[in-house]
Image 1: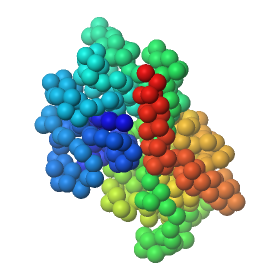
Image 2: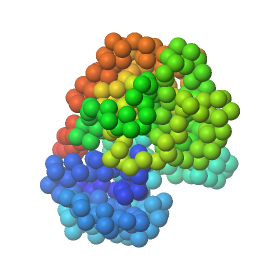
Image 3: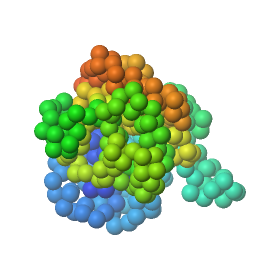
Length: 382
Protein backbone atom coordinates (compact mmCIF):
# COMPACT_ATOMS: atom_id res chain seq x y z
CA UNK A 1 0.00 0.00 0.00
CA UNK A 2 1.26 3.46 -0.95
CA UNK A 3 0.07 5.93 1.65
CA UNK A 4 0.20 9.64 2.44
CA UNK A 5 -0.44 10.87 5.99
CA UNK A 6 -1.63 14.49 6.21
CA UNK A 7 -1.63 16.24 9.57
CA UNK A 8 -1.84 19.82 10.77
CA UNK A 9 -0.22 18.80 14.06
CA UNK A 10 3.12 17.04 14.28
CA UNK A 11 6.21 17.12 16.55
CA UNK A 12 8.27 18.89 17.64
CA UNK A 13 5.02 20.58 18.69
CA UNK A 14 3.40 18.76 21.61
CA UNK A 15 -0.16 17.62 22.20
CA UNK A 16 -2.52 14.72 21.74
CA UNK A 17 -2.89 14.95 17.95
CA UNK A 18 0.87 15.44 17.58
CA UNK A 19 1.52 12.24 19.55
CA UNK A 20 -1.17 10.37 17.60
CA UNK A 21 0.27 11.46 14.25
CA UNK A 22 3.87 10.72 15.18
CA UNK A 23 3.33 7.31 16.77
CA UNK A 24 1.13 6.06 13.94
CA UNK A 25 3.48 7.44 11.28
CA UNK A 26 6.52 5.66 12.73
CA UNK A 27 4.74 2.34 12.42
CA UNK A 28 2.68 2.83 9.26
CA UNK A 29 5.92 3.68 7.47
CA UNK A 30 7.34 0.24 8.33
CA UNK A 31 4.27 -1.62 7.06
CA UNK A 32 3.66 0.41 3.88
CA UNK A 33 5.26 0.04 0.45
CA UNK A 34 5.56 3.81 0.37
CA UNK A 35 4.80 6.28 3.14
CA UNK A 36 5.17 10.05 3.59
CA UNK A 37 3.90 12.63 6.07
CA UNK A 38 2.73 16.06 4.86
CA UNK A 39 2.75 18.67 7.62
CA UNK A 40 3.43 22.38 8.27
CA UNK A 41 6.88 23.71 9.08
CA UNK A 42 7.20 24.67 12.75
CA UNK A 43 9.94 25.97 15.01
CA UNK A 44 12.55 23.27 15.34
CA UNK A 45 10.98 20.99 12.74
CA UNK A 46 14.08 20.82 10.49
CA UNK A 47 16.24 19.51 13.33
CA UNK A 48 13.51 17.11 14.46
CA UNK A 49 12.95 15.72 10.97
CA UNK A 50 16.62 14.77 10.58
CA UNK A 51 16.11 11.99 13.14
CA UNK A 52 13.07 10.48 11.43
CA UNK A 53 13.27 7.09 9.72
CA UNK A 54 10.44 7.89 7.32
CA UNK A 55 9.67 10.48 4.66
CA UNK A 56 8.21 13.82 5.70
CA UNK A 57 7.53 16.90 3.63
CA UNK A 58 6.94 20.24 5.34
CA UNK A 59 5.18 23.32 4.01
CA UNK A 60 5.81 26.88 5.15
CA UNK A 61 2.26 27.73 6.15
CA UNK A 62 0.16 27.78 9.32
CA UNK A 63 -1.51 24.54 10.31
CA UNK A 64 -5.03 25.92 9.72
CA UNK A 65 -4.10 26.83 6.12
CA UNK A 66 -2.27 23.63 5.22
CA UNK A 67 -5.16 22.49 3.04
CA UNK A 68 -4.75 25.56 0.81
CA UNK A 69 -1.16 24.83 -0.19
CA UNK A 70 -2.07 21.17 -0.69
CA UNK A 71 -4.77 22.12 -3.19
CA UNK A 72 -1.89 22.97 -5.54
CA UNK A 73 0.79 20.54 -4.36
CA UNK A 74 -1.08 17.31 -3.62
CA UNK A 75 -1.83 16.19 -7.22
CA UNK A 76 1.87 16.32 -8.13
CA UNK A 77 2.89 14.45 -4.98
CA UNK A 78 0.28 11.75 -5.63
CA UNK A 79 1.29 11.26 -9.26
CA UNK A 80 5.02 11.23 -8.55
CA UNK A 81 4.72 8.57 -5.83
CA UNK A 82 1.80 6.51 -7.19
CA UNK A 83 -0.24 7.12 -4.02
CA UNK A 84 -3.25 4.85 -3.51
CA UNK A 85 -4.73 6.24 -0.29
CA UNK A 86 -4.53 9.38 1.84
CA UNK A 87 -4.97 9.33 5.62
CA UNK A 88 -5.91 12.60 7.33
CA UNK A 89 -5.30 13.04 11.06
CA UNK A 90 -8.33 15.39 11.12
CA UNK A 91 -11.07 16.38 8.69
CA UNK A 92 -9.96 20.01 8.14
CA UNK A 93 -7.38 19.06 5.49
CA UNK A 94 -9.78 16.95 3.43
CA UNK A 95 -10.55 19.20 0.45
CA UNK A 96 -7.34 18.53 -1.58
CA UNK A 97 -7.81 14.75 -1.29
CA UNK A 98 -11.45 14.97 -2.32
CA UNK A 99 -10.47 16.84 -5.48
CA UNK A 100 -7.70 14.32 -6.13
CA UNK A 101 -10.11 11.42 -5.74
CA UNK A 102 -12.66 13.01 -8.08
CA UNK A 103 -9.89 13.24 -10.69
CA UNK A 104 -9.13 9.55 -10.24
CA UNK A 105 -5.71 10.16 -8.70
CA UNK A 106 -6.35 8.16 -5.50
CA UNK A 107 -8.68 5.32 -4.57
CA UNK A 108 -9.60 5.93 -0.92
CA UNK A 109 -9.66 8.61 1.77
CA UNK A 110 -9.39 7.78 5.47
CA UNK A 111 -9.67 10.19 8.41
CA UNK A 112 -8.94 10.02 12.14
CA UNK A 113 -11.46 11.58 14.52
CA UNK A 114 -10.76 12.77 18.06
CA UNK A 115 -13.76 14.84 19.24
CA UNK A 116 -13.09 18.56 19.59
CA UNK A 117 -12.52 19.14 15.87
CA UNK A 118 -15.99 17.74 15.15
CA UNK A 119 -17.60 20.09 17.69
CA UNK A 120 -15.54 23.26 17.30
CA UNK A 121 -16.91 25.98 15.05
CA UNK A 122 -14.48 28.92 14.70
CA UNK A 123 -17.22 31.09 13.19
CA UNK A 124 -19.68 30.75 16.06
CA UNK A 125 -23.35 29.83 16.12
CA UNK A 126 -24.75 32.46 13.72
CA UNK A 127 -25.47 32.14 10.03
CA UNK A 128 -21.77 32.28 9.16
CA UNK A 129 -21.14 29.44 11.59
CA UNK A 130 -23.94 27.43 9.99
CA UNK A 131 -22.19 27.78 6.62
CA UNK A 132 -18.99 26.44 8.18
CA UNK A 133 -20.88 23.43 9.54
CA UNK A 134 -22.46 22.79 6.13
CA UNK A 135 -18.98 22.93 4.58
CA UNK A 136 -17.73 20.40 7.17
CA UNK A 137 -20.63 18.02 6.53
CA UNK A 138 -20.20 18.33 2.75
CA UNK A 139 -16.54 17.28 3.03
CA UNK A 140 -17.29 14.45 5.44
CA UNK A 141 -19.57 12.75 2.90
CA UNK A 142 -16.56 11.98 0.68
CA UNK A 143 -14.62 10.01 3.32
CA UNK A 144 -14.42 6.25 2.77
CA UNK A 145 -13.59 5.33 6.35
CA UNK A 146 -13.36 7.11 9.70
CA UNK A 147 -11.22 6.01 12.63
CA UNK A 148 -12.57 7.64 15.82
CA UNK A 149 -10.48 7.19 18.97
CA UNK A 150 -13.46 6.38 21.20
CA UNK A 151 -17.07 5.26 21.19
CA UNK A 152 -18.02 8.82 22.13
CA UNK A 153 -16.33 10.21 19.03
CA UNK A 154 -17.96 7.49 16.91
CA UNK A 155 -21.29 8.77 18.22
CA UNK A 156 -20.41 12.32 17.13
CA UNK A 157 -19.70 11.03 13.61
CA UNK A 158 -23.03 9.20 13.50
CA UNK A 159 -24.78 12.38 14.66
CA UNK A 160 -23.20 14.08 11.64
CA UNK A 161 -24.66 11.44 9.33
CA UNK A 162 -21.73 9.04 8.92
CA UNK A 163 -22.90 5.46 8.47
CA UNK A 164 -21.83 2.79 10.91
CA UNK A 165 -20.25 0.80 8.04
CA UNK A 166 -17.84 3.69 7.47
CA UNK A 167 -16.69 3.83 11.09
CA UNK A 168 -14.00 1.73 12.77
CA UNK A 169 -13.21 2.70 16.37
CA UNK A 170 -9.44 2.75 16.86
CA UNK A 171 -8.50 3.76 20.38
CA UNK A 172 -5.38 5.71 21.21
CA UNK A 173 -2.32 3.97 22.55
CA UNK A 174 0.90 4.41 24.43
CA UNK A 175 4.43 3.10 24.13
CA UNK A 176 5.27 0.36 26.69
CA UNK A 177 8.94 0.89 25.93
CA UNK A 178 8.62 4.47 27.14
CA UNK A 179 6.25 3.93 30.07
CA UNK A 180 6.65 0.81 32.19
CA UNK A 181 6.83 -0.26 35.86
CA UNK A 182 10.12 0.63 37.51
CA UNK A 183 11.55 1.18 40.96
CA UNK A 184 11.27 4.93 41.55
CA UNK A 185 11.94 4.85 45.30
CA UNK A 186 15.06 7.02 44.99
CA UNK A 187 13.10 9.59 43.01
CA UNK A 188 10.32 9.49 45.61
CA UNK A 189 12.82 9.94 48.47
CA UNK A 190 14.48 12.92 46.76
CA UNK A 191 11.03 14.48 46.31
CA UNK A 192 10.46 14.13 50.05
CA UNK A 193 7.49 11.84 49.53
CA UNK A 194 8.80 8.53 50.87
CA UNK A 195 6.08 8.30 53.53
CA UNK A 196 3.28 9.67 51.35
CA UNK A 197 0.44 8.04 49.41
CA UNK A 198 0.72 9.93 46.15
CA UNK A 199 -2.23 11.03 44.04
CA UNK A 200 -1.04 12.19 40.60
CA UNK A 201 -2.41 14.25 37.75
CA UNK A 202 -0.43 14.96 34.57
CA UNK A 203 -2.20 17.48 32.37
CA UNK A 204 -2.39 20.93 30.90
CA UNK A 205 -3.76 23.23 33.58
CA UNK A 206 -7.09 24.27 32.12
CA UNK A 207 -10.49 24.21 33.80
CA UNK A 208 -11.98 21.24 31.99
CA UNK A 209 -9.30 18.83 33.27
CA UNK A 210 -10.90 18.83 36.74
CA UNK A 211 -7.79 19.51 38.82
CA UNK A 212 -9.86 21.90 40.96
CA UNK A 213 -12.22 19.04 41.81
CA UNK A 214 -9.37 16.89 43.15
CA UNK A 215 -8.19 19.81 45.28
CA UNK A 216 -11.74 20.19 46.65
CA UNK A 217 -11.76 16.47 47.47
CA UNK A 218 -8.45 16.55 49.35
CA UNK A 219 -9.72 17.67 52.82
CA UNK A 220 -12.02 14.64 53.02
CA UNK A 221 -9.37 12.35 51.54
CA UNK A 222 -6.90 13.50 54.23
CA UNK A 223 -9.36 12.63 56.98
CA UNK A 224 -9.27 9.00 55.84
CA UNK A 225 -5.71 8.92 54.50
CA UNK A 226 -3.67 11.45 56.52
CA UNK A 227 -0.47 10.85 54.54
CA UNK A 228 -2.11 11.48 51.15
CA UNK A 229 -0.28 13.94 48.90
CA UNK A 230 -1.51 15.38 45.59
CA UNK A 231 1.09 16.02 42.86
CA UNK A 232 0.01 18.07 39.83
CA UNK A 233 2.39 17.90 36.87
CA UNK A 234 1.89 20.34 34.01
CA UNK A 235 1.47 24.01 33.20
CA UNK A 236 -1.24 26.19 31.77
CA UNK A 237 -3.39 29.30 32.17
CA UNK A 238 -5.08 28.07 35.38
CA UNK A 239 -1.83 27.65 37.35
CA UNK A 240 -2.16 30.80 39.48
CA UNK A 241 -5.85 30.21 40.12
CA UNK A 242 -5.17 26.64 41.25
CA UNK A 243 -2.34 27.77 43.54
CA UNK A 244 -4.71 30.29 45.12
CA UNK A 245 -7.27 27.54 45.65
CA UNK A 246 -4.62 25.34 47.29
CA UNK A 247 -3.50 28.08 49.65
CA UNK A 248 -7.00 29.24 50.57
CA UNK A 249 -7.94 25.63 51.33
CA UNK A 250 -4.96 25.29 53.68
CA UNK A 251 -3.46 22.55 51.53
CA UNK A 252 0.03 23.93 50.84
CA UNK A 253 1.54 21.02 52.78
CA UNK A 254 -0.56 18.41 50.98
CA UNK A 255 -0.78 19.57 47.36
CA UNK A 256 2.03 20.66 45.04
CA UNK A 257 2.00 22.19 41.59
CA UNK A 258 5.16 20.74 40.04
CA UNK A 259 4.89 22.63 36.73
CA UNK A 260 6.16 21.35 33.41
CA UNK A 261 8.73 18.55 33.60
CA UNK A 262 11.02 16.95 31.05
CA UNK A 263 9.26 14.33 28.98
CA UNK A 264 11.78 11.70 30.09
CA UNK A 265 10.94 12.36 33.75
CA UNK A 266 7.25 11.53 33.44
CA UNK A 267 7.89 7.81 33.93
CA UNK A 268 9.29 8.54 37.40
CA UNK A 269 6.24 10.58 38.39
CA UNK A 270 3.89 7.84 37.19
CA UNK A 271 5.85 5.22 39.13
CA UNK A 272 5.76 7.06 42.46
CA UNK A 273 1.98 7.45 42.21
CA UNK A 274 -0.45 5.26 44.14
CA UNK A 275 -3.30 6.42 41.91
CA UNK A 276 -3.62 8.61 38.80
CA UNK A 277 -6.62 10.95 38.69
CA UNK A 278 -8.08 13.23 35.99
CA UNK A 279 -11.83 13.91 36.42
CA UNK A 280 -12.35 15.89 33.21
CA UNK A 281 -15.41 18.03 32.57
CA UNK A 282 -17.33 18.52 29.33
CA UNK A 283 -17.20 22.19 28.33
CA UNK A 284 -18.28 22.08 24.70
CA UNK A 285 -16.68 22.28 22.24
CA UNK A 286 -13.85 21.19 24.55
CA UNK A 287 -14.18 17.59 25.65
CA UNK A 288 -11.84 14.75 26.52
CA UNK A 289 -11.75 12.70 23.33
CA UNK A 290 -9.92 9.83 25.01
CA UNK A 291 -7.18 10.56 27.57
CA UNK A 292 -3.79 9.05 26.67
CA UNK A 293 -2.46 9.90 30.14
CA UNK A 294 -4.64 7.14 31.61
CA UNK A 295 -2.83 4.63 29.42
CA UNK A 296 0.57 6.04 30.40
CA UNK A 297 -0.30 5.51 34.07
CA UNK A 298 -1.68 2.02 33.33
CA UNK A 299 1.54 1.20 31.46
CA UNK A 300 3.34 1.83 34.78
CA UNK A 301 0.87 -0.57 36.45
CA UNK A 302 -1.01 2.20 38.22
CA UNK A 303 -4.78 2.35 38.86
CA UNK A 304 -6.58 5.31 37.33
CA UNK A 305 -9.66 7.40 38.08
CA UNK A 306 -11.50 9.43 35.46
CA UNK A 307 -14.94 10.89 34.87
CA UNK A 308 -17.60 9.68 32.45
CA UNK A 309 -16.85 12.69 30.24
CA UNK A 310 -16.41 12.29 26.48
CA UNK A 311 -14.23 9.37 25.42
CA UNK A 312 -12.75 8.55 28.83
CA UNK A 313 -14.90 5.39 29.20
CA UNK A 314 -13.03 4.01 26.17
CA UNK A 315 -9.75 4.46 28.07
CA UNK A 316 -10.99 3.28 31.47
CA UNK A 317 -13.08 0.16 31.91
CA UNK A 318 -14.76 0.70 35.27
CA UNK A 319 -13.65 -1.89 37.78
CA UNK A 320 -11.06 -3.36 35.42
CA UNK A 321 -8.17 -0.90 34.95
CA UNK A 322 -9.60 1.97 36.97
CA UNK A 323 -12.71 3.65 38.30
CA UNK A 324 -15.16 5.97 36.56
CA UNK A 325 -17.01 8.70 38.48
CA UNK A 326 -19.72 11.07 37.32
CA UNK A 327 -18.73 14.48 36.01
CA UNK A 328 -18.42 17.18 38.70
CA UNK A 329 -19.23 14.63 41.42
CA UNK A 330 -16.83 15.60 44.20
CA UNK A 331 -18.35 13.14 46.66
CA UNK A 332 -18.02 10.26 44.20
CA UNK A 333 -14.48 11.33 43.31
CA UNK A 334 -13.51 11.49 46.99
CA UNK A 335 -14.87 8.01 47.64
CA UNK A 336 -13.03 6.58 44.62
CA UNK A 337 -9.67 8.07 45.69
CA UNK A 338 -10.09 6.84 49.26
CA UNK A 339 -11.18 3.40 48.08
CA UNK A 340 -8.03 2.89 46.02
CA UNK A 341 -5.67 4.38 48.63
CA UNK A 342 -7.09 2.21 51.43
CA UNK A 343 -7.55 -1.00 49.46
CA UNK A 344 -4.14 -2.24 48.34
CA UNK A 345 -5.60 -5.39 46.80
CA UNK A 346 -7.96 -3.36 44.60
CA UNK A 347 -5.20 -0.92 43.64
CA UNK A 348 -2.86 -3.76 42.65
CA UNK A 349 -5.56 -5.55 40.66
CA UNK A 350 -6.57 -2.42 38.74
CA UNK A 351 -2.94 -1.56 38.04
CA UNK A 352 -2.07 -5.05 36.82
CA UNK A 353 -5.15 -5.14 34.60
CA UNK A 354 -4.19 -1.74 33.21
CA UNK A 355 -0.71 -2.98 32.38
CA UNK A 356 -2.20 -6.01 30.61
CA UNK A 357 -4.61 -3.74 28.69
CA UNK A 358 -1.72 -1.60 27.44
CA UNK A 359 0.51 -4.53 26.53
CA UNK A 360 -2.19 -6.42 24.65
CA UNK A 361 -4.39 -3.74 23.07
CA UNK A 362 -3.71 -0.12 23.98
CA UNK A 363 -0.23 0.28 22.53
CA UNK A 364 0.75 2.03 19.32
CA UNK A 365 2.30 -1.05 17.72
CA UNK A 366 -0.92 -3.07 18.03
CA UNK A 367 -3.05 -0.12 16.93
CA UNK A 368 -0.90 0.72 13.90
CA UNK A 369 -0.96 -2.91 12.72
CA UNK A 370 -4.73 -3.00 13.11
CA UNK A 371 -5.08 0.29 11.23
CA UNK A 372 -2.77 -0.79 8.41
CA UNK A 373 -4.61 -4.09 7.95
CA UNK A 374 -7.99 -2.36 7.88
CA UNK A 375 -6.74 0.23 5.37
CA UNK A 376 -5.39 -2.54 3.11
CA UNK A 377 -8.67 -4.44 3.30
CA UNK A 378 -10.73 -1.40 2.42
CA UNK A 379 -8.35 -0.47 -0.38
CA UNK A 380 -8.70 -3.96 -1.87
CA UNK A 381 -12.50 -3.88 -1.60
CA UNK A 382 -12.97 -1.18 -4.21
